[in-house]
Image (tube, rainbow, N blue to C red):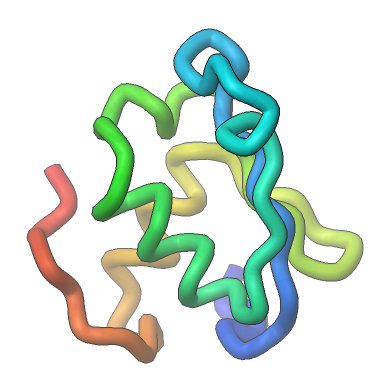
Length: 83
C-alpha cells in the first residue's frame, strides 16, 4: 500500500448496497487522492463497507481506503478525521 501513487487516475466502485444510482455505483477520478477524499468525506461512512478503489492493477477495499486517507502521505487537506 505504501507505493500507491496518489496522483494516478482511479476508479471507485462504491458498494451497491448503498449506491443506488448508476452515477453513484462507479466514478472515475483524475487522481486517487480525489477518489479517496470523495469516499471518506462526501458520502456516508457506511459506504466504505463493500466499496473498492482501483488504481492501475491494484484494488483497495474499504479498510485499505481508510488507511490511505489516514496515511501521512495523503496529499490533500483532510476535512474530517476518519472514524
